[in-house]
Image 1: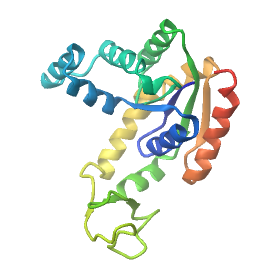
Image 2 (image 1 turned 135 degrees about the vertical axis):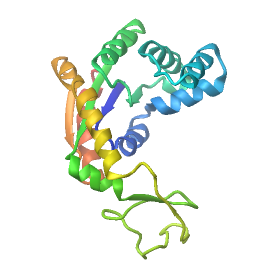
Image 3 (image 1 turned 180 degrees about the horizontal axis):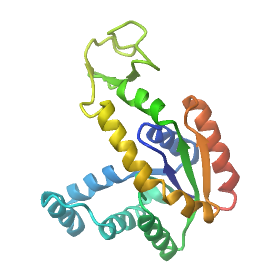
Image 4 (image 1 turned 120 degrees about the vertical axis):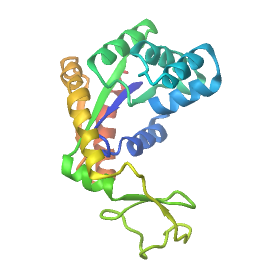
Length: 220
């Protein structure tokens, strides 16, 4: 069973993808992780990707599809995959459909996690992690039980992402709305699109996603 997980920055795609992995035996494929792994491998595609990035150029759709094609042939993808971060455009969505068709496969569902921009700004700009154990927190939604002390390991050192500013977050949201949202009608026409309310707590979002996946798993 192959799924696409869509949603704006901060919508919780990574958290929900992990739950889907655990519940359905699928493999989350993050484009960022795949790029790093391909480059580290040193194979011809990896070298081509490295040269492209070193030249300050964007990775082409053709190279992305080639990378995905090789990745989904690996053993840990045999039960199906969750595409996270791809596709981002209609051209990429069409390319992914073509690739899966060539392999005798298809998408079972596309899950869209919808969320309000302001809620996402609040969520992203408030997040921080423990510098020692990596536990995740949020100033507004999930503060530490004792101010300045990690709940898990007791550390008093925390990391804050330098790009989690309101200006940067709003630019990332603009990119999502302008570039990625146009693929929603493409999947809606195919009857693949399922939308869930990302403004709710993570457990309720996970329940809605599971219901959507269960509704198509029998035919996937």
